[in-house]
Length: 350
Image 1: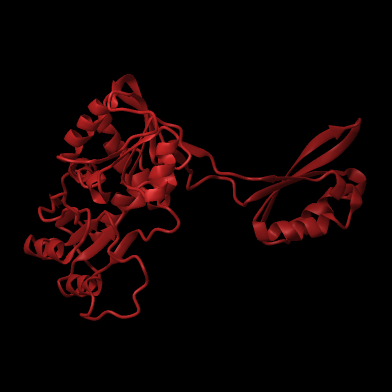
Image 2: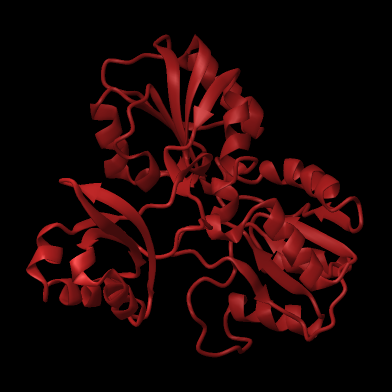
């Protein structure tokens, strides 16, 4: 499968537009074109050990959930392990692609997989994503009326000369007077020019309405998940469910103030990976994530919210098995998709 065609299909599966603005997602390393992908290699973290495995298994593209290139590189030498990853990838004509938070937000993504371990529940994003594409252009809408004596055509013509402005008009009747109602969609930069133009005419300016435009929220796409169980279970039962789902023998637990292992759990707020910023301020019986800062755990516990920490990548890696099956179906089995066998969380309980 051609690399460009595969990248397009991957974006159809989960749009990179859902990724957080600070993230570094998409194609990070590209061999010189044309590049054909016969084997797609999935890993949570691309370490040097995992790279060696990918090369041994003849991978043409590595999908690394975490981006191995995050901060800008000033040089590509043999000095650091991330630089060596780039060198080995290019020398062996292997591409590197990372979806990261795009997969966190996706309806069929990492957080939905994590929620499967809780039991039967309904869930919604804690922070819903906004639609990436929407017919309306611009950031603001400006509306005002023009009487026929004020020459609507001249006003419209002047406004259309401002870059970043689109104008629609329709007839309206106000105080038994026929008027032309103008509606402008404009960019943030164009807004100031529109306001400057309208302020030259007191009658326009005093009756002008300015609306801030927001793209619609997506009900099933976004960061974190707030999950409401069909039936409450004890915290102890929930811990066992989570350990079973993540295939872990141990997790870390902070009991909320006044809570015990027998306390009921009905609402769980979760975030794969590092969940502090996503979970903060969310009302729930339990927070589930990979890692949180010491002080954020204390804050949650002080509110009676228990916290389960499983280590960062332990809340993500199991998703890759589901991802392989979903991508097999999405790509119609056109390429070979394999999971890393050496990828693992760097932290162990001993």
